[in-house]
Length: 312
Image: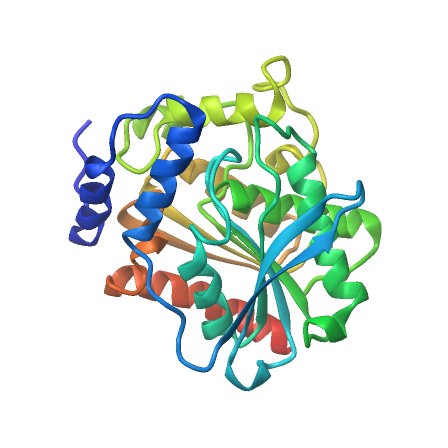
C-alpha cells in the first residue's frame, strides 16, 4: 500500500533507513538508541534532571529519570512509561518526550526504566510501573509532588502500561489518578482489527513486528489469546471509574484501531476522554514534536488536557 505521508514524517523515515541491519536483540536495541538519538533535543534551561532508583516489590532497583520543571513545577506528578515494543528503550531513548511532558504540563515527570521482555515477561514491566507510581504516592516529598495530583502517560508499549496501570490503580484503590495519557497505545494482542491489514507495512511499525512484540511480552503460549485486562486493557469488561483519558493515534499505524476502540469504550463507560487523530502520520510521530508543527500541536493537545486535569 502507498502511504500519503505528511512531510513531517520524512526525517523519521530517513533516520530509520540509515540504521544497519539487525536480527540479534542486542543490535535491535542498539539501533533503537541510535534512532532515538537523531531526534534528541536537550531539556530547557532551568529544568532539573536526576537519575535515581526506586525499590521494586521483588527487591530489584528500578532506574528512573526525574524531570523537575524550573521553579519546582506545579506540585503535580506524572509517571511516564516509554515505548519500544516491550523489548527495547529506556529513559534515555525517550528523553525528549520525558522532559517535554514536564515542560508542557508543569508536573514533575518520572520516566520509568521498567524491565524489558523477553528476559522479563508480563507482569514484570507492569509491576515496575505500578511500584514507581506507588512510590510517588507514598513518598511525595521525595519528588516534590502532591500525592493526590498524579497521572500516568505512555507511548506505544508504554501506552499499554499506562492504561494497565490506571486499571491496576482502580483495582487497588490507590492512588486515585487525575488523568491518563495514551500515545498510539497497543491494547490487545488479537491482531484482527482492520488497521492491522490496512497498515500492515506502515513505515513506523509493522503488523509483523507487533505480533513479535506480543510474543516476547506475553510468551509464545499466551500471545494472541489474552483475557487479562492488565496485559491487554482493551479486553476489559468494565472501564468505569477510570481517570480522564487523552488518546493520540496516527493514521498510518497498525495500532490506530486499538486507540479508537479504547476511546469508544471509555466514553461508553462514562469516562471523560479526549482524542486526537494525526492524519498522514506514522507510529512514533511524537518524536518530531519539536521540529514539526503538526506533531507539536498534537502533543500540546494532550499535555493541555493533562495539565488541566492535574490542576482541577
